[in-house]
Length: 562
Image 1: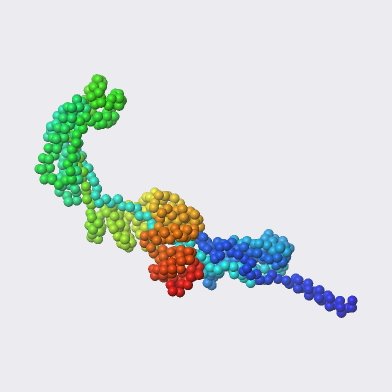
Image 2: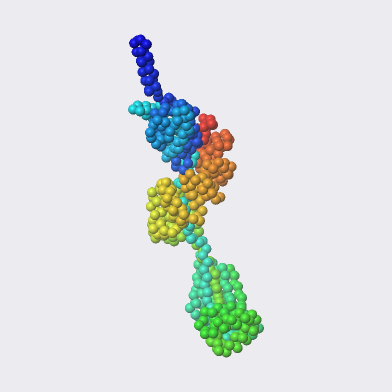
């Protein structure tokens, strides 16, 4: 070989060696990657997905180290996910090795905390390569487009907070009783008996009710008794005589006091008051009372009972002195309805002089309006007039929650809790505040203490949707017809149930119609989409903007709607 030829061959070898050392990774295409789900979808508060890549054979250079970083790009912003580290066969490291001859399948789990701007976004993979002392990048690859954010329509703010009910009763029934005692075997009403303190109170109450337009005498009852000593026939006459004479006295008294308007006057008598006898013996300190009670249980015939008890000579004198006289009486019972203020009277009183209303009346007044501002005003006055009643603060906070003043609502819920920490309604409402702030631990604790409340179901639906637990969310629905319940059914792909729930929503709002449009989109019902989107946008223009970017409607022409 001459010198010239040798030089040419050496130069050629050097060039080939240089070319080999300078070989770099080439650009990949989106066909090499699969994303599940695609498009991305919000679960809970995150956007999770799994990227699977197929690195082709004879692609991954043996001395290459590659950092694959997923970027979610939205507007002028981008958020990086956790990177995946890959390395060639000659690299000494702990990353996943991609053989040169065979290539490899690589998996990259991702998760982004959802932001509203991400609804219109793209998922890209960036590749940073290091080969020896050299570093370079290969072009990014777009692997998915957009985020389906339907789950974010779960709203703690739409959950109905719990109101502690008032105890207002339009009609309160009162009973007044008095006894007229009789001498043994006698039926005459004695003057000293009609002048007792109890009878004076009875007559006074009946007279007052007769004169008060807000009181109504519903019934006067006379129940007369005879003690169970003597024959049944005789005792029947005695008890009946006591009933008749008591009624005569009452008729005379009513006539003197001009009492003529009342519901009914009823009378009855008990010939032998064995029930009363047994009760009084049981409550007494008679030494042999157990023996007496055993006789009562052994003999059911009244005359046999009396005979056997009389045979107990050691105790009969005690019975005659302590027990039997208490069973010779007529009991008068007046049932009186106290009629409270009408709805109009209560509202007029609130307008003129709220102090004239009891706490039950003023709490009830708030239920007479559907205007949340008016309710707030009434409960605020209730809290100022009755600051020691936890219900006033809880209910005021509930109205503030509905009105969107969450800071004020939180303060009043906390005040209510300081007065009654065990109230389930207060616990639920504090849980809603925690849920609004994504404090799921506190929300879960509070909701646990509110078990049994009807309002809890909707709160739990939102809680579980935000946790990404669709099975639990759907299980919490329990016959409620709310937007949140329907959303749980949509996310669980139970579209027929979701439609039925939405149609049954008591007061449909913009979200109700938007969710109906989503059901229409997922069931390929274009008319359902356009009709309901049009109504949603009419009620809340923000839904028009959302719909324009929402991938739920990507295959529909919304130009006529938006």
